[in-house]
Each structure stands twice: as structure tokens, then as C-alpha cells.
Image 1: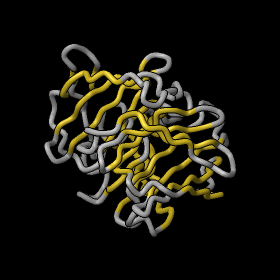
Image 2: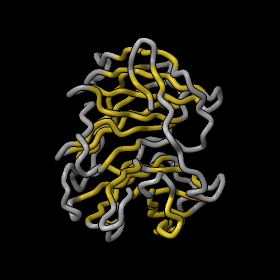
Image 3: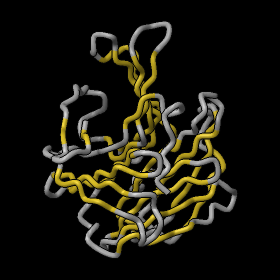
Image 4: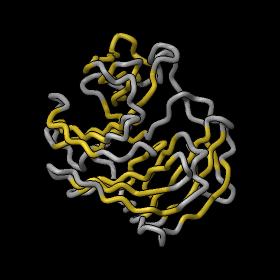
Length: 256
């Protein structure tokens, strides 16, 4: 757990091993957790790509902190995901299990696709937009009733916001925040900071290092970005993702 401060702080948290086959997960959406009833414990859930397959995944951690191996599932949704380079889910601030959930994926040819999902009945109604082949990595920074926004880096080092209206056309609105120096990050993780800002972690897998930033409410090149420093930890994992408790009731991101 990383905390913004001077210097940046790190608190060690317990992890769980052998949830997935070694080395197979390539991508993960946000991972949420909720209380399991009637059995005690918490269920952790999200979507993962392993090899060329997309899976709906969950596992249960008992009250004693151990994983309940009898209650774990990787349910295959489908194949054809071997070239996908980014995966994310945006949950609504709505505890109704049938409220609309948005799934996003980016392919190397620059196609960004969104699927609808209501009540877990499948990824339906795909809509796509092209032109994002230069994107290296992305992270969700805004969730509203009318749009989702991602913060994206390019291989050339630029930093952009990509706003995707929640309409049938899904016509992107792209704004440049910075022109250079961001190409070193292989993964971005964002969390809400205050009412309008974003706490951003950039991870460089080559050097196994992470850097923390406080990003003001995104407004093109006028966006305030404050570097908080290098995180005193080693980032040697294959996959990184945002972790929240109860994503349907968590405060919505509002970074743009």
C-alpha cells in the first residue's frame, strides 16, 4: 500500500499465492472484494487474460486470511485475446447488480473497444474507435454518468487523456497533457485524490521501479502534475491493477 507523503511511504500487505497458474496471467481489470454471505470471508473478483483466453475470475479469502481453494473459479469467457494489450472495467456507483458495467480493451492495431455488461450476462454490444496504435499503456481516471476517461502514455513519451462518451458512437475526445518523458512507464495505476484529482503510480518494469504523481483535474496542457518521488519498493510483478473494496459502492474516479 503506497501513501502520498514526503517522502512517499509504503506499507507491506499480505499477499496470496497460487491463485493463477504461474506466469500465465497477462492482463487484469480492477479487482474488487465484497463480504461473502452466508459464509464468512471476502470474495475477490475481476477479469483476467491468460494466454489467448479471457476469464471471469474470483476467489474467496476466509476470516483466517487463507484462500478457500474449494471456492475459486476462472470461468472462460472466450478466446482471441492473445494480442490484447490493455484491459479494464468501469463499474457504476450503483449497488444494483443489473446496473450497466463497461469493459474496455485495446489491441496493438490501435482499436479501443467497449462492451456492455448487465448482471454478468456477458460482454455485449461492442463499440470501437481506432487511432490508438501509439498508446503504450492506459489507466482509468474518470467515471461519470456520461463518459469514462483514461490517462494514456505513448511510445514517443506523450501523455494524453482519452474521454469516451457513453453513447452508441463512442467518439473519443483526446487531449494532450505533456509531450515527452512518459515513455518509460509500462503500467499506470490511478486512484482518486481529493474531489477532482488523481494519485498516479507509473511503473517501469525494466528498472522494477515506481514513481508517484499527484495529477490535478485534467485540462489539457494546463493540467498540474506534481512529482512526489520514487516509491521505496521493487516492482517485479508481471501484472498490475487497481484494487478496491466493493467497486459498485466505491467513490467514482473524477480526474477529468
